[in-house]
Length: 99
Image 1 (cartoon, rainbow, N blue to C red):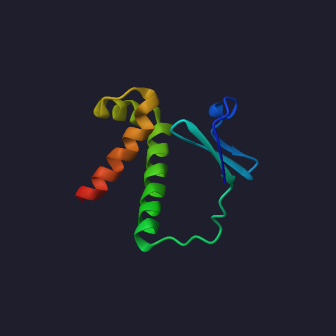
Image 2 (tube, rainbow, N blue to C red; image 1 turned 60 degrees about the vertical axis):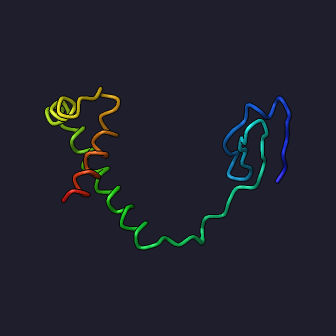
């Protein structure tokens, strides 16, 4: 891992070709190798949340595909069209938590 205060590197953030990662910490740029996440294991709770997110995604996409349902959801949630997907995901999680 290398740390740099270079003016050129201050503008970089992200990864290159899944080999090098550029991170910004305050006024420093940290350069490190791309992490190997192939051997990670998820807990039961993480798997449950991933399954809920999967269901929420397809529910939201289904609503957004139908113009009438999308308009009704937009009015019900009081959001603009570009924020509808996020609001539908939030609504799904809230309904799952209550019920």
